Image (cartoon, rainbow, N blue to C red; front, side):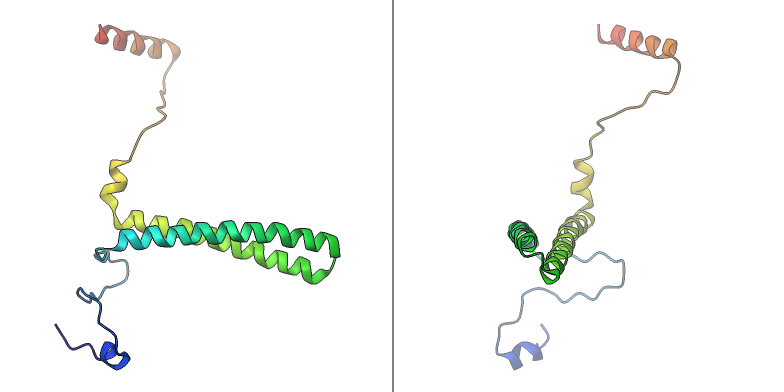
Length: 134
């Protein structure tokens, strides 16, 4: 393994694994503990969003009581921050799904089917299906 100058200068242990250079739009092999990292980050997002929602409600009460423009500005900023946190949570899940395409394909379920045709054709199809089950 190559000498890790950065780890030596900071006095820390280097991370295990290979350093992988990637080009844009190229999948990178996920480290072994990426599932744990994903779950940890996801929990953090949930906690931040829940805490932010509570803080938003409290700040909204303060803004209503004081009717001060700065209080409403803080509420607006907090709302934008919460929206961004929600977007980041969804984005993180999408990135995980792209990194594991086989897992996503296995979960694919068809909930609705659409029949295009006349009522007579549908009745004939249902009759044929019923006869096939018997």
